[in-house]
Length: 153
Image (cartoon, rainbow, N blue to C red; front, side, top):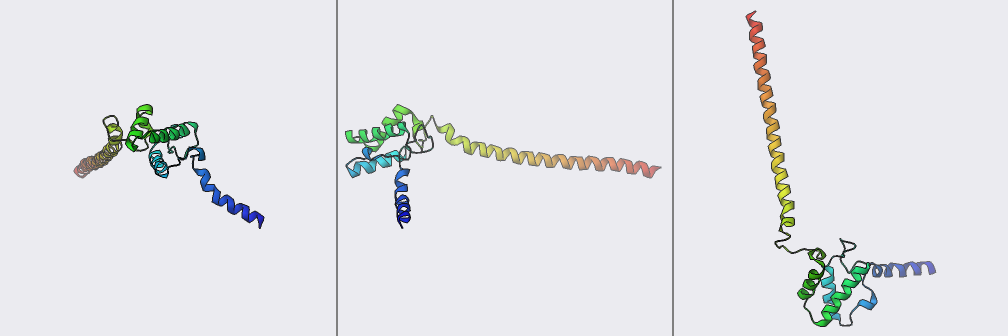
């Protein structure tokens, strides 16, 4: 009975350990805290790289979470907070980078490589097929010469 109770408590407390946000970081104002969570969900942990700063336990992620909350307490809007952090750490800190001049190559390179690969594949397929047809014609012409020379004898 006591063991089951312990397991039940672990099951309910486990999801709390998944969040990197520590209790001393949480703002008292629920609206500001919700805004901080929204902003943090779009910011990449520079240590973990594919994890947002709310989910990370890295020291840098904690510093970024505190910075977000500090900027919100000063009165910045969500966009101003993101812009401040991007100015400091670069656009790599965004999990969803903006479609701008510096990142346009990254945005179009994937579809462009896919289209070029598809075109190359089609061209190779048809050139291979054409080679096989010409080989068959060459063989049949050669066979025809042999046949005519055999018939002349």
